[in-house]
Amino acid sequence: MTERFKRRGDFIVFSAFSVLIIFTIVFAQEAAKVSYPTGYRDWAHVKSMLIFDQKHPLFNPFGGLHHIYVNGKGLNTYKEGGPFPDGSIIVFDLLEANLEQGAYLEGSQKFVGMMQKDSKKFKETGGWGFDAFEKDTKSSFVKDGGKSCFGCHAAQKDKDYVFSKYRP
Amino acid sequence: MTERFKRRGDFIVFSAFSVLIIFTIVFAQEAAKVSYPTGYRDWAHVKSMLIFDQKHPLFNPFGGLHHIYVNGKGLNTYKEGGPFPDGSIIVFDLLEANLEQGAYLEGSQKFVGMMQKDSKKFKETGGWGFDAFEKDTKSSFVKDGGKSCFGCHAAQKDKDYVFSKYRP
Image (cartoon, rainbow over all chains, first blue to last red; front, side, top):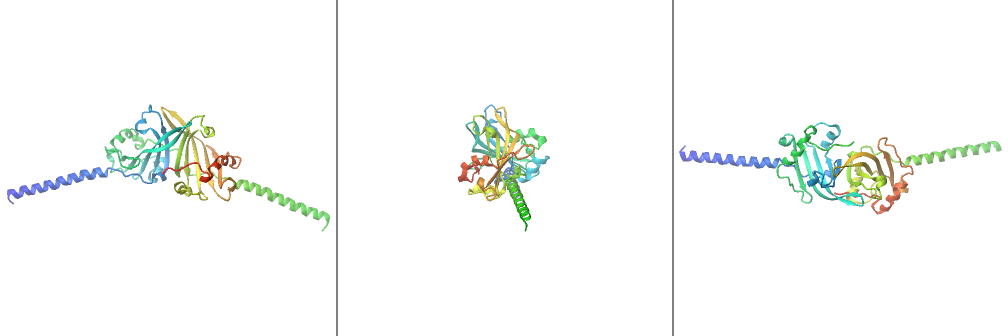
């Protein structure tokens, strides 16, 4: 093999390897995402909470009435305890809270947040994939792979990173 | 037949007839009741509302955070409209609302109300059986066969006597 061919061969190997690395990075980023939780309104309702005052530390961005829903895979863990199995999905559905005559009524949706358990895929964030979706377009708006979400949820490590509790 | 036997026969017929009437009345009263909606926490969640101020006309007895749930038979009517089919059950789960730091959190249960559709059995109250249950004992405390409940729900005749609306 001539020096020229050897260099050319090295270049091809190097290029192919580079493309492989780029593909791996792109694929890994895609894989870390979760999908919009279609059908969650038919799932079991875990609990609700109304944050109405700016003095509440979570008012921005969680001001309003939120409902927590869980899919069939995760429901039993809420009831019985223990770590959530892979496939569990928890939804945080945030609505405007409209004040009328001494009552708060459900208003329009603000956004949908969710956690999806996959202990291998999301091992860097406690086994949970986090994301949030715009109210109308349902497009994801969490840009850091859920690290900011996990920043708060990490405090709940002994409850498998979940804040909400189920009432019987 | 002597006069004495005739009178005795009349008395027996009269007695038997009286017992039949009493049994019919007792049975009809029993039949008009609905049973505690066991398992409703696994049903679909329709909507919620928080009544926190005494100035709200429904504060007594509905002050607190309430959730509306519907069983599988009734869910589609909430989504698509039309009259609810027999067997539909709608639950009104009323909880204390605890004020903390600019937010209302779910407190202990106050009581559970429910409507059960049976267009033949409950035709005097719009085809719905109404009842409400104590939080701990789960014993019924509606004593008028649901007529007082129906008094308010009658205004919703064009919506099959149901107040709550489903958000998609």
